[in-house]
Length: 268
Ligand code: GLU
Image (cartoon, rainbow, N blue to C red; front, side):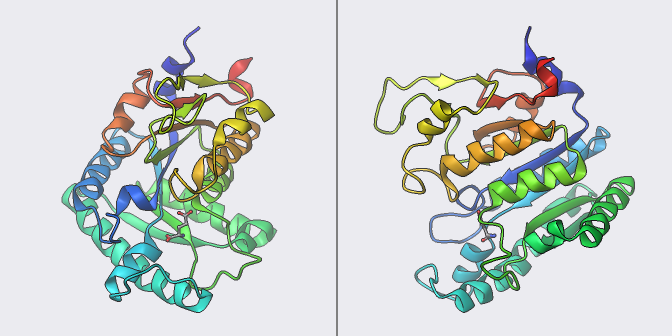
């Protein structure tokens, strides 16, 4: 049975885009990608799907805005840079989405908003209300106020948490590596792409490679942990190359690209 064909019917979709996909290495915004992303997501929304974008990049963009030559390491500077960058990101997203007549909203979350039942319910109601009004929420970690204890460690985790909160059918992680491989493809040319994963076992986790060194921001490990979370919350997950965001259409049409992690219910 071809699981991929089922992706066509998925109605509620979370798309996460990593820092290295949305910005250039110097921290400035990759406008071409952002524009394509806005086009694809607005079109999915027009098809009647509920779409959420989880976008990283605030700290990188803020650092560039502030003329910092290196990413800040001190927490207070990180928070300051992220809050400057978040405003830039949203402004540009809003302009691009506006070209397609697509309304957007900004939702910044901390762990506390998910742990606390009242805040969790409020967040969930806000998402539902926005979906009903065909708005695309753009989510990030609330870097300006999140303290170390409350902060989501990375946006891979945050996007899986959001997928769970809204009962998403599919989470797509757009990143700088096109799939999960059985060995590090950048070091081992014979590495094979894994098309479908039914369960993230310890063996699969061991394929994550060195954390944070060669892979995008969170690394492959955080993506696999996100897949574990999704499996439990009945969300399918795909890891794919974000170089051309129009890849989203191919994924939803069931093309065999990237790596698909099938949720628990799907396998029945
Ligand atoms: N919230 C961070 C930012 O927007 C990104 C964290 C991550 O990509 O994992 O800069």
